[in-house]
Amino acid sequence: MNTKLCTILAVLSCFFIISPIVFSNTPSPEDVKNYKRAALQGDALAQCNLGSCYYNGYGVERNPQEAVLWYKKAAIQREPEALINLGICYMIGSGVEKNPQEAVQCFRKAAEQGRATAQYYLGVCYENGDGVKENPQEAMRWFRKAAEQGEPEAQFYLGNLYCGGNREEKNLQEAVRWYRKAAEQGHGTAQYNLGVFYRNGYGVKENPQEAVRWLRKAAEQGYASAQFNLGLCYDEGYGVKGNPEEAVRWWIKAAEQGLDSAQLCLGFCYEHGVGVEKDPQEAVRWYRKAAKQGNLKAIKSLEVIQSSQSGKEPQKEVIPSKS
Image 1 (cartoon, rainbow, N blue to C red):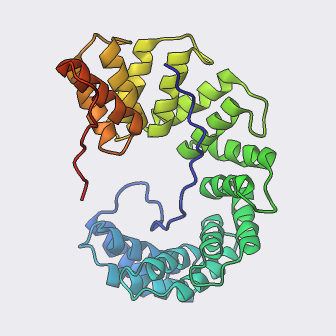
Image 2 (cartoon, rainbow, N blue to C red):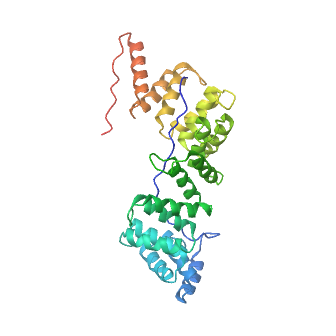
Image 3 (cartoon, one colour):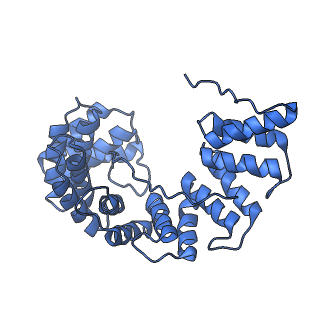
């Protein structure tokens, strides 16, 4: 198939996730009683843990408002994890009225204590202008602080910034360095981007084997674009021995997640018997899925199949509107 590897990099929007204290085991009702006993005595860590129990419904009925109450008590004592979780609650409006400015203050207090997660979230705020005036330089400064402590999301996002557009900071070699750090910690999107870099020689010498290695790692984590591109590697024999059956296997995984380019490839395979037995009905099924997403090649393929079946000139395939 004359299909080139997708070179679009994944650039995720930053988002906030409640990050409760990590428990070795899910707390029981008895654990909650112990946390509450210590929390009432003013133990900041117990107050934070109790807040996380209420937020997540661990050993107690879920109650975000009660969670915020306990996070606030711990935050007054500058407990960093409580500050982070309270900041997230303010940012997303969970258990408390949404207040991005208050969220920024919480993140800053924890970030100044050296907490990498808080530094990353503060970078997000400066990057997106959430609760503070947008400031790319401040965003990069806080992302770097978090990244240098090994925070994989910050490393990934720092890699994105070094890729980025018209920024003065654009530096593909630095992007590779930070993507690699995140990828080595199992960050699936960073693994995918690193595979794309090795495939196309962005900031690093083109290396088919390394491209396949990183695409495979991301694909095994269920990342659809990586699964599609790994299928292309097997289809083309790029960095790996050509294997149409293996290509189809990865395209199925990506297609089932709704990736139209993989659906198009599957339609072609079933139409022509590449890596699978010919199956016109399956071909049409996958072409239709891709066509419904506006894939022009899939629409054209359906027109050709329709004309061959009717013996008439190709007619434009009518795809139902999504609306």
